[in-house]
Length: 380
Ligand SMILES: Cc1ncc(COP(=O)(O)O)c(C=O)c1O
Image (cartoon, rainbow, N blue to C red; front, side, top):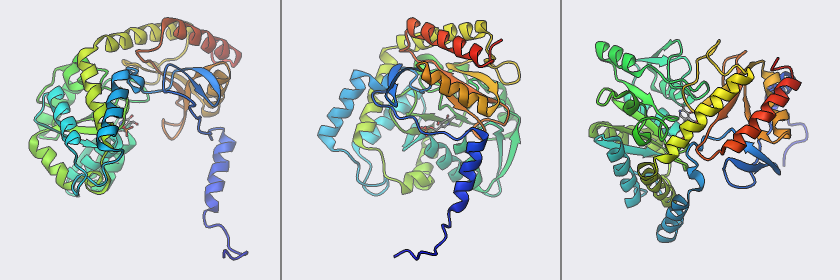
């Protein structure tokens, strides 16, 4: 029985939550009632969805759905173990081979998420005698991996492919520097997999720097439509990660349905390039129209977007969250992102284009953005 006098040792969490409430940046999770799609229902409200990473609309692709169902019927719902114990199924190996062929590299290892791929790789290959040169805005998974490795971390001013601003890093120049100093070159292609390069082969293909990047990390959770992360590189790199990457060694592998879904997704990338073309057509339209309305879409005090991630920079955290809530009331889901996800004073609504938004849906979303933007004094 809990003694009546016991004080709650977690009381400080309530204080911190109250702090967020005072600042106006506390949020409640929005719950999706149906499929992840361009038009969907969150919390019972039909909205135009400008918030997902479902770049190519693959979350609901019939071929991927069927692949998941077939794998479940054939192999069951779980893998039952970590990869190194008894949880490596034939279908996991097939997926790794498929990705390695697609990326034209020797080998690939699949992790449970992009987060696990980044954190697991950085922490496995580096140690306390190493230096990490890391972009200021690197994803939390890279930062955590770097901290776990105990290497010395040198942070350089933002210069990369980034999920909050949508800019693309100057990869050839970074490769030059890495080659000059004999550094290992690693790219986190979470938002470039399926989006940039031929058939979505990623940033290395986009810049044609094949053979100059040692470690290519990608995610299976965004454009690929399912779940997971992967690392591509030499056979030895992958073999080493099989032996030393902690999420690989200590966390159960994907259900067979996930592996089957991802295999089908890479087939779609190869066979339906029109999806990527449509994504870029929508991106060009959206960027142009938002700019014409007078929104700050980056390029003033923040990096200019070059990808389907297009932020509407507001600045103040509370105003951003209020803007997001008002947009939702008017039928548009645009997630507000504030500190600590982005630096203080650079809060924004992050909008993301997909291949499945129609022109009519985008025009309707623009009308709502303009109306609410004027009402709240965000647009002049
Ligand atoms: C830049 C970046 N890297 C890595 C990840 C992690 O990917 P995942 O969602 O597959 O864990 C994300 C996504 O959240 C990301 O935006």
